Length: 171
Image (cartoon, rainbow, N blue to C red; front, side, top):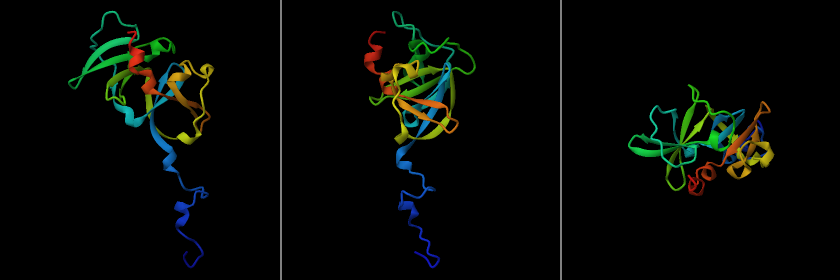
């Protein structure tokens, strides 16, 4: 404590309002699918691509499996989750993007989204569960949602569940 009666220990005092608890926050990439905003943990994202001109189509696959691309020497499956989850018409325009994600088992998979927004730091301690009726996407593919300052709902996608090998077996 200094002579003015102040101390600099408020960093360790959780009651102080000016301290941000980064232990409960993570960075997420936000994107749009239809009318809803979703987010994926930033560390899972390898890169963001424009929709590729050349995709090698695979015979006898589901319509949401668009095919394969060569991304810097790596063969990457491209999945249109807009079709899988029927989030609206799948339009391929200048906003259409591919988010290349790395799974826990080190597979790289590209998911097609309507539009990539930005990176946000979110407090994951306030994550609320998503009911099946709250999103076009079944709740088993979602971690929950947070309400943003503008009162908009941001749904956190469980990308591991979306691109799990069992999901791709039928393709």
